Length: 140
Image (cartoon, rainbow, N blue to C red):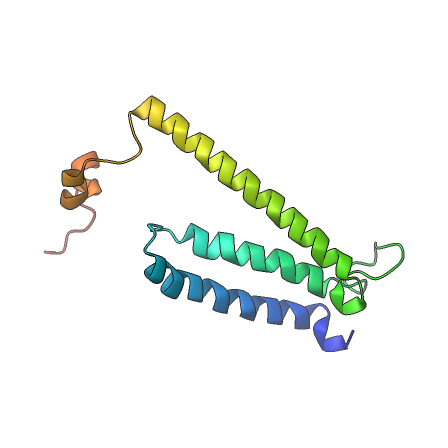
């Protein structure tokens, strides 16, 4: 591959694309779909991590990883199979995350008597209703 697509050049491209995709997911997609993700875990870690894993298969290089005994590392070196490997690994990670989250939610549902607070607690604010304190003192 061209020298600009190895090492720092690839990292710059991956970082730029990751920033754009994560911003788009957090600002546009979350608003459009209306899902509740106050910490933007899905938009940043889910989408950004998935993109990073796939781009790693594209930009993988023997220049950066000389431990590859023979052959080509990533797609830009002619190894499309590495992108497939990355997609399979990403799919496995998604399944583990989805199943693990579901199991944890079910355990919390049984142990804690639900995973949502009452609507009046949401309206009042969880800092006050659950912890007995205000999150911000705006009058100071």
